[in-house]
Amino acid sequence: MTFFEVKTSPSAFLNVQVKIRTEALSLVWMDDDHHLLVQRMLSLQAEGLNCRQIADRLNASGTTSWTGKSFYPELVQGQQRSGSDQN
Image (tube, rainbow, N blue to C red; front, side, top):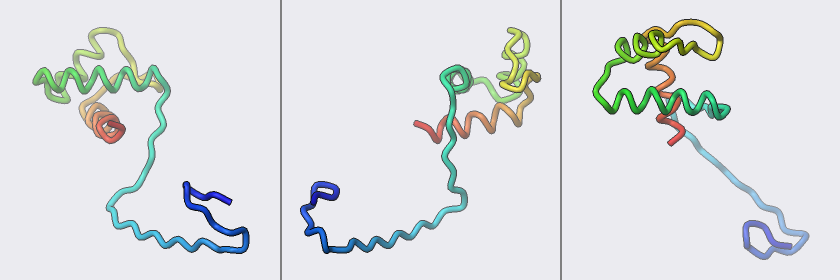
C-alpha cells in the first residue's frame, strides 16, 4: 500500500496531529466572474485608487456586486482582502 508515496503495510496505522494557530481560517470559493471582478479591484488598487474611488468607478461603469447592489468602500476592501488571500 502506498500513502503519499510512502510504502506502508496494510496493518499499519497512520496517526497525524495537526496544530493550527490563526486569527481567521477560511477558504473562499469564487466563480470565474467573481474572481475577475476581484482582480479588477486589485488592479485598480495597484494603480493607486483607494476603496472609495474603486467603488465609485465600479458604480459609474454600471458594475454591480454579485447580489446586484452598488459597491461601497467596505465591500471593496473585503473583496480585495479575500482576493489577495487567493493568490
